[in-house]
Image (cartoon, rainbow, N blue to C red; front, side, top):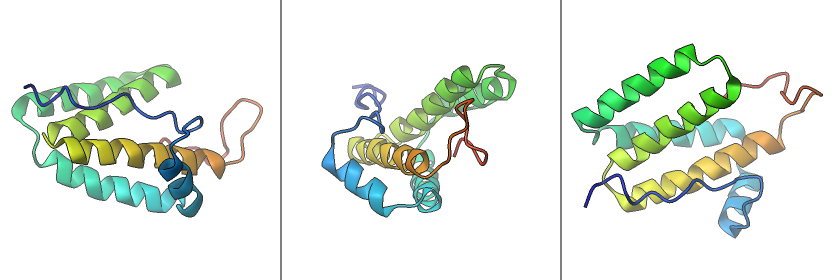
Length: 125
């Protein structure tokens, strides 16, 4: 079995009806969620093989040159999914998926949105 096949579709944090995501987003700040992601992803990335590393570098390069925010967000999502799947551990990949939904929900619920749709302090986290 290819280790890239077990990650489910990302949770839609805004519309997630998973009680654990809703609960965790309510008790988590964006900073705490980001620190959790950094901790988990550094552990997951240690298990990446050369093919994963090559793809991660390509995604990072493409993100630097992305001219549209939507494209950059898709590339960013793919990079973080790649890190999760590269672990080869389906449980850790699923925890990453849930944690990412919590992180997105925590960020969205706490930011002030301007008319152009961006928060004044927006960053991609």
